[in-house]
Length: 162
Image 1 (cartoon, helix red, strand yellow):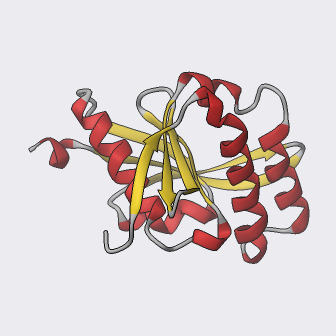
Image 2: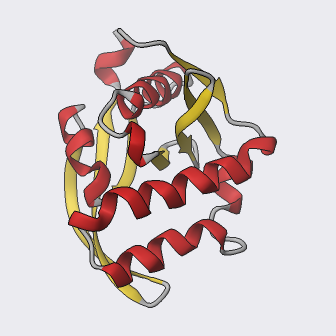
């Protein structure tokens, strides 16, 4: 990378920070893609008890750090699923997502996995497509009683293992 980005493994001490990045990413980037009620419902999940607890505490995650500040994070939970990938709005489209995906994909491949799956929002959909993820189908869900469309996607890791 041309900039000074570094990765650090997510720890239990980083859960509040990850929740802050999660909410900020949605609130700062989703305004052109989602309705206000969707943004409120989605970003509120960061602070609801139980919703992000298991991925953050049982998953394997990484923070992307720039100039000593955490700008983005990604979590794999369970081991074959990209559960979370969020970047602060001020750092969007600056390589953090790709940097984190490189780590997540490489780590999964090193653990013997052949494929990763995820449920992508409109925020991450184009990045995942550019990085070789394939759309399997569209799914309609409700978050906090509000409807959303998301993309079920997967990526083969076979080319990484060569």
